[in-house]
Image (cartoon, rainbow over all chains, first blue to last red; front, side):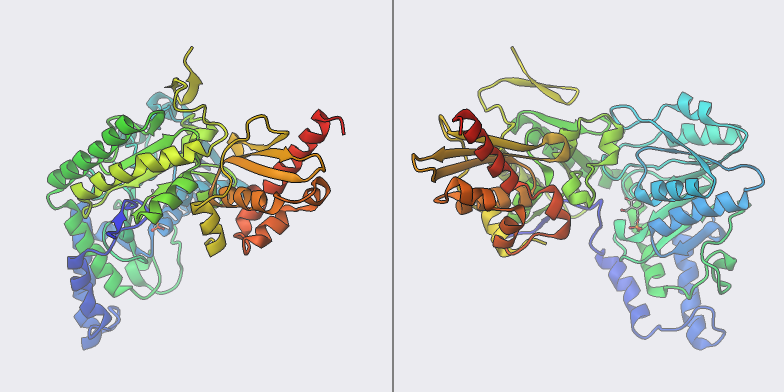
Length: 402
Length: 124
Ligand SMILES: Cc1ncc(COP(=O)(O)O)c(C=O)c1O
């Protein structure tokens, strides 16, 4: 049976061109780019070329790019590095309730060390309120950290407006763009972003490489101390093959972006419309328009997300869920919680994230297999009122219609 | 993640449904914690469990343990069934992942709630 992968927000397969590009650096090109001899020289150019490719993809200069091991490292570096570098100025961070743990957990950790953190609320679509953001700024604020695109729902932040507010108040702006690159345009000048975080494995590079953009003149305490690599900003012998892959993946990610995004959106919209038409009592989580073109997060009332995922998996369909059972905690998705999605619908949420390899046939197959699975699980559910009871999902609460 | 036995009971759950005019009904959990199990009992004159059915909202472990507890309870006396523990149900399924042991392993509790309900409604 064909395998259908609709979990591209979790990770992506390595792009064939990326793989070809990195392969020599896992074989004959083994040198350390910091070495002066022939072996080092042979790979130094490759690292610098990759730096240019990353910079170009986000409209930055190569000197502003630092290679990391993952998105989480970039987020840690940006936030902890800022807090340390600006500790004379203040100790206040503004972020949102819907960030990735790579940001949220750093903030809760820093709270224990004396920082103050404002976690902005979001509305039912996952959107922050710009007036609330501006009102949260104090003279102690050193950082605004707001993601470009949400990994669970795909909701896009109003980056340009946030950037303007940050600039007006002369506050540093960090954005986690791990989910954004290759799906929507990402431009650090246009967005007025001071620090931007990317991760390789979400865009067709392998796991274990990422990058952070740090605007020229932005003081940031290193996260990893040691050797002088990356102009003392990140110690550790370069992961040359990974970096080469990261460069190529960034180049490919922005190539024909409009066309690729249009294709993704068409397929995603087909999936969304098809599910909503075939399955009663669903709730789409995320902004109706300001959303990543590849992401559909949808709750199926009366059933639990993991049991749906397991059934889809038996049909070789890979997706993910915001249920507690799959998040490894007892609480369902903090993102859906912040959006006010009732907890039982958060447990039933399922995320389909499409990728460049997704085909029309894949979507047809899901639309054929999914509705009977949902119905079977509903028939097993003690809270399902039955097919004949007409109910109405009103802001997520499904109530019987009189 | 799950044992073959869990997957078997999850894919082909035994005794799904409701019993019309059940002698006892028990429900544990709630939707906000992600698991609800409802157990229906049919008990004969000698206090032996003749039939059990279940309905469950929950993850793979919740559905599999519900299915397993129905198999384990059928044919037992009420007193024997009251001895069944959540751990024994998990054991019969060749174990559950550790994070599932507390949150989704409530099937014996649901059975006990149904027995309690039976005793109460029959003044025993
Ligand atoms: C929005 C966002 N930020 C950060 C990360 C972490 O990236 P990495 O897995 O490379 O550490 C992820 C990936 O799960 C993500 O989706």
